[in-house]
Length: 66
Image 1 (cartoon, rainbow, N blue to C red):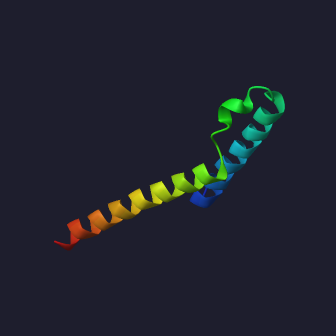
Image 2: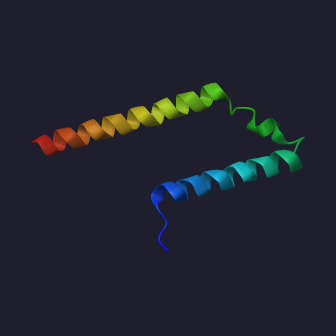
């Protein structure tokens, strides 16, 4: 049976969430290494990749236009 793309993404997401929960439960004292992961850093990362994707799409559009 062939899996759809959305189902595969959801499965990867769920596996990542379970892995993070297991990590948080087993390694309590060493999680200070992940203190840089904040909501602001995630927002900046998402905006950065969104901007890169936008610039790439504009470049592809300009290239195909000529």
